Length: 467
Image (cartoon, rainbow, N blue to C red; front, side):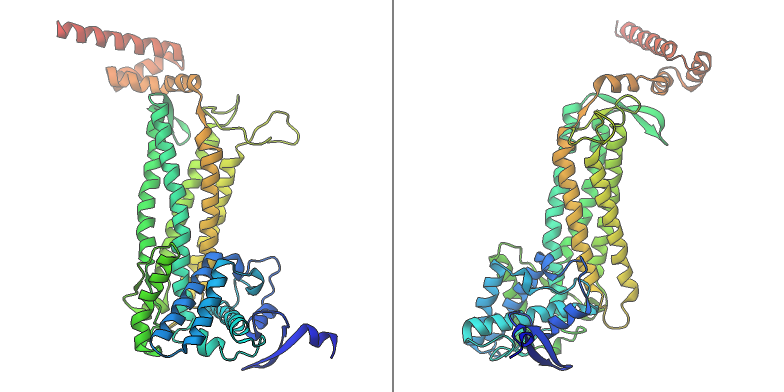
């Protein structure tokens, strides 16, 4: 026996014999994918645990359903369920090495899982070697009554729905943080700007609650789309033909899967997509979510840049707020502190928007009856959600919750030239204020004295009317 034969076993599939690492729980289709699509630092199946767990839950529900309807032997079903339960508790990353992008359709993801579950179940319950695929076969038993298309698509919906919940929680928390700060900082006024030029004075609460309200509106839209992910195509098999699976399986699989999700602490509520052919042709709900997240990312980027601008200085900038000092900002300038946490949010949003662009391209290239680019959709979407969640969490904890207004600077700004002239316009009219501006020629003290005089005259007039 050669050294090479000790390291590998030979499996034969429809393309012929292929060497598989002897101790690998996966099989030839997985190993072919590993050889064809080298990672080179990219992410693999095991790097998306929410997706992996969702597919495991579908495989468990399928095995249970197939036993219940009498098409899978009870001992085979029990072995699969036992193996899946163990994997759900502690999935072994080494078992799932397939590149996140591995050709169309997610087939390598699905077959990787089918092979691993068959091999592990055969060894633990029937004491057979890896690669024998007896009595449990990856296609005939683990994949029974479903296909890559409906299994993978449904898993995408489940995984994204769960990931989105974490993100929505963080953004809702940011909105609440801003409203709380608005209450704390009220009635401190700040200078509002249009086109980066001085405009009118507003309360800090006006600005902060304006940002919060915008986030709330986007949250509501995103939440509706996340809820729409409950509609899945499980039972539609390859291109939406429900006749490709047993009618009893078609009727029973979603209730069984919902029960499994609830048992694991996740919401059930899955329903069947109204048109399974449409679900095969496009991934509209996921793409809609990506587009909304792209908009949210840009809003978060704008807010983070606002913080960066308002905190600029401390002497040569706006210096309207002070952000928590989290790390030294320069290797060459002593005492310099940069707004690195808002900048992390900006970077996260930029990266998220790039992923949204990749996701949107998949709609253009799903020819005829099947859109095979869901691996791009789900991995980029999960990455997008993860990086935005991280960005918002850091922004909240390390920046927003500890920032403070610079009261003296804001009071001075709020009574500067243009806000004072606006106040004078309110008191005496536009023409009067324009004449004062012309005569003052930028003399802020002169304008402020005129405003005080106008306010005093108005107050005296009001007293006389009361008398």
